[in-house]
Image (tube, rainbow, N blue to C red; front, side, top):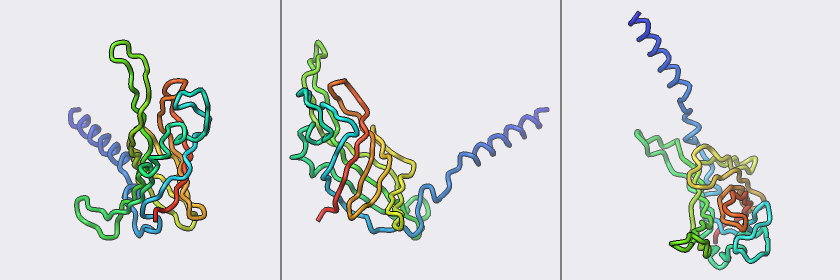
Length: 189
């Protein structure tokens, strides 16, 4: 009976490991396109719904205007990097394409004792995901591995402009909300 239980447990463990294994193609890409590698500057950064982020009573779709961050827009850029696989045994035909999305990150300032809201400041945060550029379709396939508070949903290329949809939390006149943002970027010169 003990042998039967031991054999059963080993079979269950092996079957679980096989189900959870990740295909090499889900992490690494063979023969990737390097066409979109580089840095891109933001020229549109809109929420799907009008919001009041600076609490002036006026609602707008333009998140960078609402955060008073257009003057700092050079730090909110998009970056694509395709790196060779360097984990374990180096394989020169496998690469890891990554998308880095730099976005405004809110910091709330409140009174220490009472905890009353005073104002919001903004620094920047990075949303990172693995991706694969499908050149024929002009689609940037977002793969597993979104890191950070937000999440990159989709990205595509149209007329030398990269459009990205993502979710990020912001402090609005209604409190904390997850906003869906549609941003557009042009290649940095």
